Length: 281
Image (tube, rainbow, N blue to C red):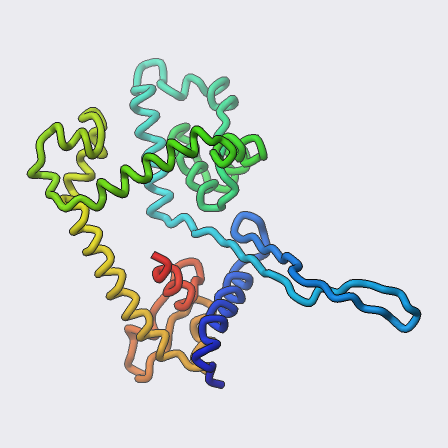
């Protein structure tokens, strides 16, 4: 059946909710689902007993992204780099000589987002030169208790929140500047980025070149991607939809259309979810 254009947005949101809820087993690491009653109706039974029934509810579904293999590798490399800089290889064994103390006392605190917890565990794996998979490291070293959350979340700290907002404004102003970083002076570099000792940030901005032009280019590329995704979504009919539920890809009109039918989406993400995620940017 065709969906009326006026209901298409709601229909797509319901499909995304279905896909997210069906993708994994229910668990706090990947998803959070909240149902809040908004309106109540008084109901009286035959015996005169009065009760209340919910007539309207708000459904809130939150799901974090997945840590990719590239992201995991980058976190491990960052941990290894920190280990080499703090404890260079030496006859004493470097960080490995702290096995009985530092390793056991180390506490890594994160938010309760699944991808953040996995990133922290991957960092610990590289820093402590641990063997094995990420989940056991996450369980033993990564903490997400209420105290950790309070320490990481500046919501209740007005001074910290004020500083965060101030720096966001400065970053936004610098990213909007229509200038080429390679043609600016050292003083201008420091005004935009900070001290020259922040080597990685200066190097990154040099790669960016002109921040404003680069932002427009990114927006243009994302727009082209969305056009292609919308075109692919337009080929989906009610009968074809089942072909992508498991992340198997989208079937085109032609039997020889391997470019469409061969699509594999990461972690079983559907084409609709992928499109809406990019559209939010």
